[in-house]
Image (cartoon, one colour):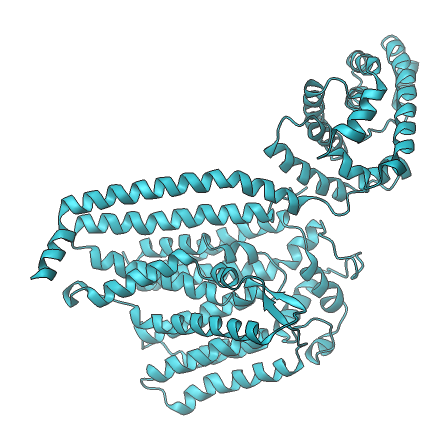
Length: 226
Length: 380
């Protein structure tokens, strides 16, 4: 008796419509909560993607290590993910611009470097790197304009941003002991400013002179991560 | 709609090629990692076939089948030792090596999933075949080890074939399974010594279902492979292994929500009047319950007897449960669909419930794989 009443109850359309609504509601809630935690997964992916050790850019900058596109791609994967989670981090845009230049994708590099300048107009390296790419592309006027803007920025601000302001991106690249790298970094920045002044002079003269353009093509202009 | 042999084969072939193509894309995006590099650098590219067969390589697992196949593939594609020190095995980007080293594993998993697809399209329906493929593709173990130059994908394939053969014994007794099962058990024994658990359980099941086979034949199918597995176990390096989190290790292989479905299935099978139960695969579940139970007990005993461990126990050591879980979940779903077919409303609810669980598992697997960042390495 009880069993037949129970089965009637479970087999009735009304009960089943209520169950269907309940199931759909439960799945929607569950799906929503899983979707929310996907951002957490994106962040935990960062820890798994972080290159170990992180000294390759430093080695490239200061010790002129051999350029290895596989390694640069490895770093770019990490910064791509960081960019996905935090798209407006200026440092990430800057580093990605640097990486994509060496991955032979200058259009992406320009895009990232322009964004980096937009998010932090005081950081010198991004202006310099963008000017170098424009120079490679023979866009001398644009290169001169952007470099001019960069050279007006205070180098102390760039140094401060590099050594203090960027805990997520630049500090891990510089290593654990800042006292060790401080002299090298400031020295490197000084040299690049000097190079920038030389370059802007050439760029300003380049428009009318084939000889200067030839000279600009001959100079080995590198981008710097910092 | 059930397909005949030829149509099923044709469709499964297409599924296999599609999965293979996906596998190649995944290989490009997954860097070579420590364990793969270690086997490659210290055994596969260094030792001769004779060395591999005589246990003269430093890997803990001495069962040679994986290493022999891997060495052959590397020889065919002229992949020699990578320029990496075996003492500093960091994640390595080497696209040709990533693809070549994972060709066998890609074939194993693609073949295993296509066989599951073939089995369901041949003996059940095309709908349930696609459903089973979906169930397989939302399993985290599939994505974790699809492209992995280690023995786990081979183990996954052989377990799939073993389970399908055993189940064929039940639903298609005309199919001769003794020789193929003996071959699969031998290959399992040459792949991993831990396979003796699943071979022993297969023996118990075959004893229950023996039909036209005698005990001698059944003993041969299982005793010889168990002997080989034990022989290799004697040469395997013995490490003290302990789980970091018992339940986590177990539930990476068997999804907790699937266990919930199995409970519902068992209750329904018990409570439903006979007239509704037109067909059922529930007898097969005994095998999988035993497999699950034996694995759980094995880990528990290992945990209780290990005080200071050398290494952690990883869920990949239980990869053989994953195909069992995929098959069992698909079969349970098929029965639940069949039993509810006569009442449209219940059928709709069962569909929402089972479909919803598959979608949710898909999202959770996506989240887990994303968190691991396994496939976030852009090729090129």
